[in-house]
Image 1 (cartoon, rainbow, N blue to C red):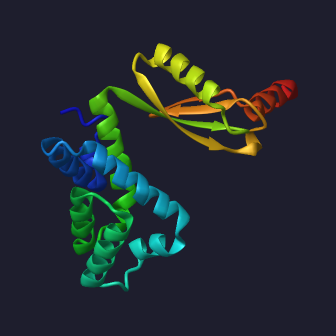
Image 2 (cartoon, rainbow, N blue to C red):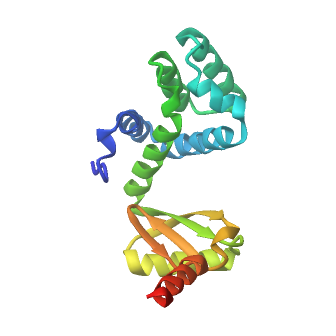
Length: 184
């Protein structure tokens, strides 16, 4: 199995790799990805949930109970719920976001997809996203899944990150480059 970029070398990568193998065996990769999407959203939206993952005062048993309760409320699949329980018992809840990212990367690699993070000054329309995916597929040779963000500070254009490669065509960068060139 291709672990792309040494995913299995990190702590989160080892959890993600084990979970991915189990998910493949039980044909539940899509369910686990869906559960991780819910977890990622909860981590971004709830400061209480985020602080739970890093609070050293919460015991292993308390963390396990909380995770079990949250998993039930969030309707997470069984494999993800068990993985969260293992993370709680091993005092590794702070690794949830990293495990999620590593799992999603493994799943995308397995499907022959590449993930790209796109930052734009304004939200992209569906047509713009589709055209960008088409152009990136032409360049990269694989299907590209976009994760989009907006940042008005870039003024215009796009910043596209694919793995360690970055394509920065933002207006802010162009203006800075022009400014430096004019200074000599």
